[in-house]
Amino acid sequence: MDFFRRYIMFIQLLFMNWVGKLGVILASTAFISFFILEGLSLIGVFRSTYTGIVTYFIIPVIFIIGLILLPIGWQMQKKKTGTTLHNVFTDKLGDGSIGTHNFWEKVIPVVLILTVVNVLFIVAAGSSAMHYMDDSEFCGTACHTIMGPEWQVYSVSPHSRVPCVDCHIGEGVEALAAAKINGAWQAIAAMFDLYNKPIGTPIHNLRPARETCGKCHWPEKHYGSKLVKIERYKEDEANTKQYTTLNLKVDAANGVGSGIHWHIAEDNEVRYSSVDDLREDMIWVEVKQANGEYKRFTNKHLADSTFDSIEPRIMDCVDCHNRATHIYEQPDAALDKAMARGLIDTELPFIKREGLAAIITQHEVKTEGLAAIEERLSAFYAIEYPDQKFENLESSIDAIQEIYDRNIHPEMKIEWNTYPNHLGHRVEFGCFSCHNFMQHEQSDGCFRCHNKHLLDETGATISDDCTLCHSILSLGERDPLQYLLDQDFRTFEEHKNTYFREEYLKNF
Image 1 (cartoon, rainbow, N blue to C red):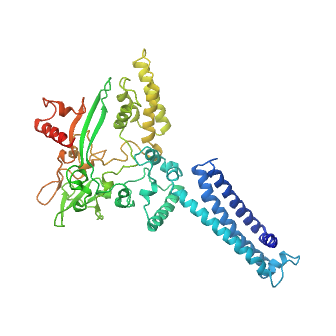
Image 2: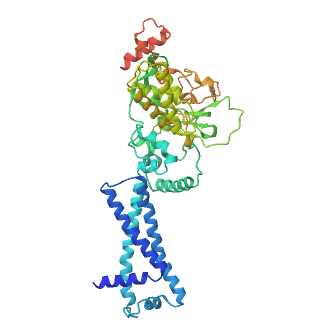
Image 3: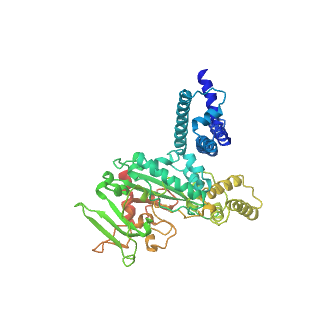
């Protein structure tokens, strides 16, 4: 009971004036509210980004403000009375409960205990806040307008169960400190609308791929060949299905010494410099030779141009897999994928053509775009096929709207092709899409380096032979293995088909 009396006495001292009273009210309310909200969250009553912001950010700030007001109130009272702090306390407790000699003996234990409680509370709140900020849902939904698009495409990506911090922060105190400093600037940018629309890429402050991607994907693993079958649909009335089948040589013969992953072998270091450091239009490319020296291939189209000197970049995973997580689709490919999965009924006449026309139409507001998709498709089938009832029309329209909703974000100025994917290359223009060099809307992918414009001192180029990375077993054909079955070689020249057949039989 003696301590309780001391505590009551201390509270009376805190209620020195209106500033002290306000400090006590703020600190006490914040302290109690934190545990109430945390308890309700733990038992599942509610859990959302905004309650987390209140619990782990706003309440601790209110608590600290309340604590700061307490000594301010004492100083104000001291200044008002023109005496010492001890006399201020003595005057406050005029009933003689404070002796001149044992005053601090009564007050200090209470102060120490409350200080320990306060420190533990702040540490617990800070720790909870750090843990909460590492949650992917917080990253994606706290600033909905800015990160909403990234959250949508991340949620359906192959890495949707990989926490954001694993790639965007990395491990170690240095990485954590850098991330929090960068996060503070991002909060200011979001508050005062100082961010770019759309958010610029590539992100230059990402941790090196060996410290992020390499935690799960390691160069020493032998992947061999991978058979990939792609289903595409024509824009005719029957939505005719076509197949493109590739034998991808991830590392077909000698581990990372050959195939697509040749680029990440330690002995095959590749480095380059690109226009504006955007990793799209190459100024020059260097390849490490067996003697340790580098062979440089210079872009003849940019040889006479002047660019700011930029530190060359060593090629790693994200130079090709630049959209490994935040994957924005191409409109036709997204429709093909949904049709192949049965989300869009391929029995609907012209659904590929009409669906594509509906989703590539630009709108200022997303809701207008979604409404226009439904209106256009419903009207088309009502006018062109008035006597037919299509049972799956509504669900197909929903699937097409979902594609639009996932990829198009007018509020952030994200449209089709805003974020090009460097994996592979543009097939719409054939293997020699590099002839449209620097005139593209989509990424040239592999052909950023493998093209006829990068020359070494002897005039040699980096090979752009198709068979370096894959063999084509079918390219927009009626059968997935058309070039293995076609004995007349009507589509491909004979020597290519023979090569592809023998290679396929060898690997599979």
